Length: 230
Length: 83
Image (cartoon, rainbow over all chains, first blue to last red; front, side):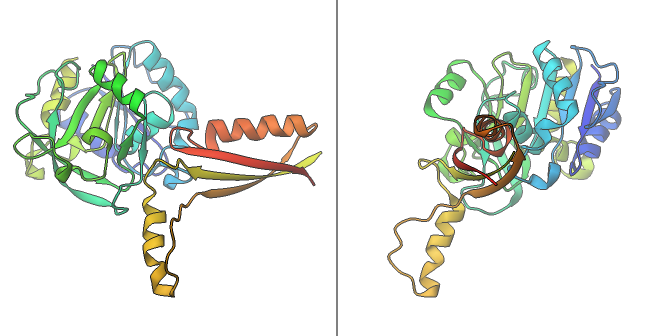
């Protein structure tokens, strides 16, 4: 599988993603400038990464302007063909704003920017991103966001549950769901979801920041390796 | 013809508005007590060319729906006048 990392003005995790897929995982990886529409030869068997950061300075709403960049039309077409798209943090916000994922990311309930390690429960193995993960063991992944409160209305939440679209939830180290460890007030502790077609993924935590020995934490590597397997 | 649109965008009532909540809490520091609620939204002023009021309304409606507001979290209302 080849990877294409989209770069918006204000992206700041694009090089981290490029590094982890090309250097750590040894995959062919290209950068995709947001003003281009060319996907540099990526096919529907490949994956587009929408990285974290503060695209367009979070003006208006996080991800609201980035969804209008020319590359997003190509990303939508790629997703419609069944190609993989994975958004992390600001990437998750952009995918929700673009309508490629349901719901929206609101300002954290506590109003503060939160930067810390949290624990995630893998809610389902039924996705290319989580197929190799253990649903009975939590993983420790850092978050770094101000607008991470996932919101969807009751009917939407019911659909997410019914279609097994919730992939990660904030949990205790012991893998239990609890309001006490919900860092931002997200509905149902939701940290990551996929679309109904199971080819578009979004999550607030940063697996690329927990994927090398130098990070002191390798808990993020499992899902990235899982994605590489396709 | 030139038109001016005044657009108000507010978070849905059922959603927690952390900014509004924090501002309300701090009203007591300027000796204003008994404030029941404060919610914070956005006001957008837009000057645009349009053929007539209907054309201007269509453009403003599209701007609100596709960019200025996210209807999952916000509602909007606007007034339009010729200038």
